[in-house]
Image (cartoon, rainbow, N blue to C red; front, side):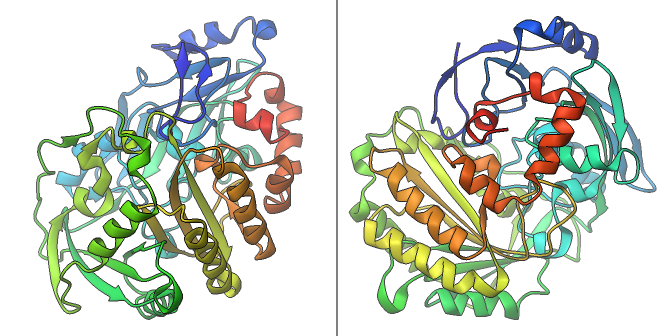
Length: 435
């Protein structure tokens, strides 16, 4: 069948398998002689080809909650459980996932494999930093337990390893106490990129922070932004998630997305009425997952799909590097209405984890013939400033760019070779990157 991820580019021909038990997964992988490209898949919210292969193992049927300790907040669950389910069950009871990405429609296995991050990385790190243990089905058929202290190399290769060390079967996570589900949001309008950097640093103690950027602004207004700060409401209470959702019923005509339409949208969005002292009480979904309120929003980019370009640049070079990225984007007229800037804290011990201490910029671009050479130009800027690209968003990075920016890739590949994973667990992405 034809299969793609959230960006809808690329589209591949794959055999989709939906096992309903651990034994079914094991039977699927035996004999392995006729399978050299198997990859696990969750809800399909990675953007490129990291969850595409000849044989795709969709884990959604393995979605049971196994245990929960009310005193510690430790929950054990199967890898196919979604973050949406965990939040639905535990947030009303005062427990929150410590790190969540921009959508709740991600499985636990996918969140670990991508080592996802959220709007609080500067304080809480990645999703994998809160995984206490996991069970991994290896190429040999053995299920191995690993954690930060047990089989630590395998654990650090699996968190952020894009499913290339084996299939995550279940995991134990550490939730954290929160007073309630309400978020107090403060919006700060900034005139340009330098000012938003200053505001991020000024509010570095905020629990959550994220900025929307007008990536088509130029000159003195380059990088003008709306910075959204968030805190859990101290008076607690549970605000039910919004009911219903808008839906994009069909592919939008791609020609509607051009520098003029996007420029007009960005200008209107930036000029939204904003009182810098005003604080708004909103429910968690509206702050953490704003686009989840629009079903099939990826259709807005047309039938050919889109690519999200997400990079991180270290702290000392971030202002210079992101300035150059925005200048190149604005000059090319390839901006989007979704451009996001976040502050990262320190990197962790996971070998292929994306975050570095610095700033991450994400921009969406509709697919068109001229896009790929343009993104190679952006790659050069990122590498020149010591940065790297996010594997969970990547659909076209070269092997050279990957190897220059992920220094532990050789350790990762050596572990795959030693465990036999390289002969079975492969994706379109891993093949493109020389893994």
